[in-house]
Every structure is written in C-alpha cells, then in structure tokens.
Length: 303
Image (cartoon, rainbow, N blue to C red; front, side, top):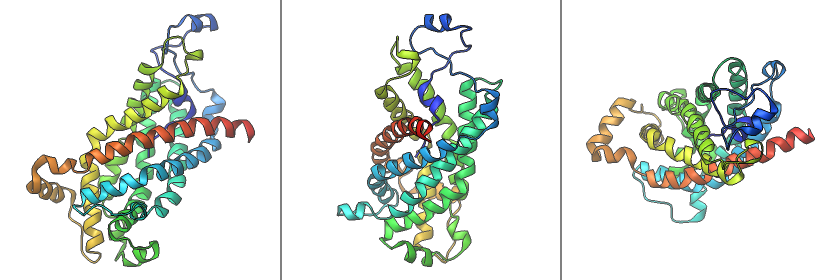
C-alpha cells in the first residue's frame, strides 16, 4: 500500500525556514519546514528505509488483504467469499511481494526526494518522488496483481496459477493502467503532507505531529486519493479478471473495457466495490505509516 520517509512522516512545511533556533521556537503550531538534506545525505542511500518499508508493507498486507479480496469479487461481479479462509486466498503472493515492493518503492522515493531537495519546494519534492517511485515499481505490481487477482477469483494455488497463465503478454495484462494508477502516489504524498500539517496541534514538540495525527493523515490521504483513482483500479482488475478467465485469449484494451463497464451500469459501475476499498484504505494506511515511523528510527539507532 502507499507511505513516506521519516522526514515526511514527522515534519510539516512552510514557504521558508526560520534562520535560527530562536526563530524556530517562535513559530506557532505545525508550520515547521522540513529541514533540507545535507550534501552528504543527498549523496548517500538510506538502506534502513528499504528494510523499514519491507516490514511496513508486510504488516499492511495482513491487515488489508481480506477486504481486498471482497473488493476484487465485487469489481469482477462475483459472489463474496463464504469463509475466513477464502478471504485470505492469494495472501502469500502479496505478503512475500509487499515487503520487497515497499522496500523498492521507499528506496526509489527516498533517493529521488533527496536529489530534488537541494533547491526545490519540499511539497514538490515529495509529490514528484512519489510519482517516480510508483512508475518504477509498476511492472512488478502488474505481475503481483495478475497472480493475486486470479488466486482470489479461482482459489488456485500459486503453482497452479502460474501454470495456467498462458503467455508473457497475459502475465502483464493491465500494465498501462497499473502504471497510471501507481503514478498517483505523488498525489497521495501531497495529500498526506497537507493533512498532516493541518492536523498537527499548535505547540507540538519540535513541530512533530502526534501518532494520532500521523495515522489520521495517512488514512485520510489514502481515502482522498482513492476517490479519484478508483475507476482506474476497476478497469485494470476487470482486465486481469478477463485474462484469468481466458488464459489463452487477449484481454480487452482499457478503452473497450471502460465502454463495456459504462454500458453495463453507467458511471456507477466504475465505483462498484468502492465502499470496501475505503474500509480497507483507511486501516491499511493507518497501520503502514505508524509502523514505518516506529521501525525506521529504531533501525537507524541499532544498526
């Protein structure tokens, strides 16, 4: 699921930074600008963020997978699973992949953000870095989504699912829509930083938001982002569901898929399963962000 580095998770932004410690103390409430990275920080890679991201990603997957299964069944027009075991169908693939995926996402994000942070507004750096990271991981998320959705819909094992995928083209079904979807991570980062700034109480120590504000900002940013990008997710999941049902065939293009969905039930079809997604988006983001915030400083202190 989507999160930030330690500085984005613990700092808010203003147009310019105070020039001295005394001026910083005079600043009211959460209007504290994130400190710019030093030249040394911009020239190095934070390996701790890779590990912290992998842990946070795995935790988020365990929390969100049951609701994700319900969402996929709703989007594909299938009957909801009837047992708890069915709700965790396909969890192995995203659980294993989520750690590596979040590690790659946060690693790319952190390095891009550092390179941009020298002379650009912090909000722009976080938004741009989030979008670049999303685009970089989109081929991997396409593969994971292809296998996960087929397991959720069919109940097949990973090995059986892998054998049933007919071709490399089928394996990368929905790549274009996935790339578009993942690029919206920049919008998530922008919404997260703005919400965190708004929620941080005046007088917070060092301008750092409390845990509840970070959790609320992460959950709120995810909900806001899903309102915009949900139709993209519906289209790519329908494409993948078609590929799962017809392994030897060719999945419909995104435009043909959109037209078919609109003919089926109008614009409302593009938001089928939306309530389940919102129920999942908030808790998952609320778990991932605090986990990342707690784990990263701990790793930096002990490793």
